Length: 135
Ligand code: CO
Image 1 (cartoon, rainbow, N blue to C red):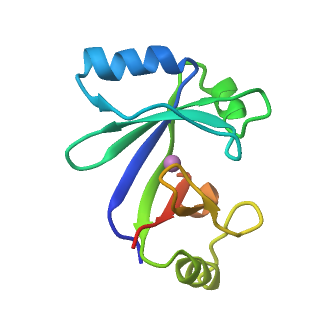
Image 2 (cartoon, rainbow, N blue to C red):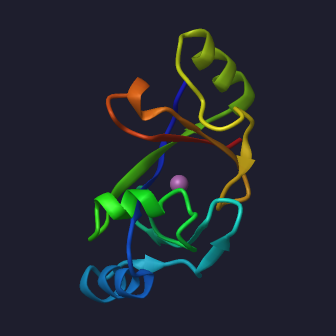
């Protein structure tokens, strides 16, 4: 069902500081900054040879990751993203197996312009999983 690891996402309290850390200290190549109001975040991707690291900062206190940062004030790993070929079929199969899709269960458009959805962390070893359709 799942394919490649698309990215690991880290919630950060200060995106500019996180960019400097990944660019200057770790020497990573970063994408342009994106603002995703529907997801309540601004973000950049660090492009690594085999995957990406998503660095994301909440847009405001209503952001879904604002609560995460209240509990993890210096930042922390927020979710991991796996690629799937057909996100609707993947969601149907997972729901049939007893997993819960967050929100209304419908895919939304994510940072790469592809449909994404999130799976309940309680069903997956305490890890928030994002599925991204990559065809
Ligand atoms: Co993500």
